[in-house]
Image 1 (cartoon, one colour):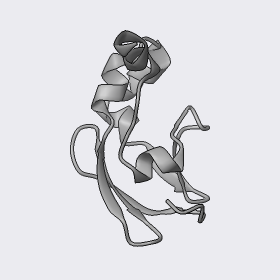
Image 2: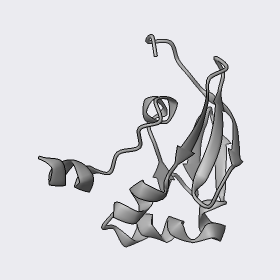
Image 3: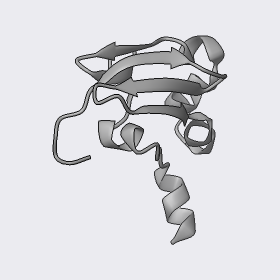
Length: 93
């Protein structure tokens, strides 16, 4: 990203916990959320492993969200396809 504001214009489910995201600059990513959700120690986040709950995503103001922002990710992380769980970072340190 070059400091320009990037928005998500399309999101389609492409697997159990995979979304195909298209950004307004034409970039597209298949983002797999399963590793992030599986490694989370928080039960509210892990609840999105339920297929029906995961499928409840929407695009709001160019961002990908679930519920009342119960789950959301920084656009830059989605754009670069690098969803990182902080527990994974701590284990690596």
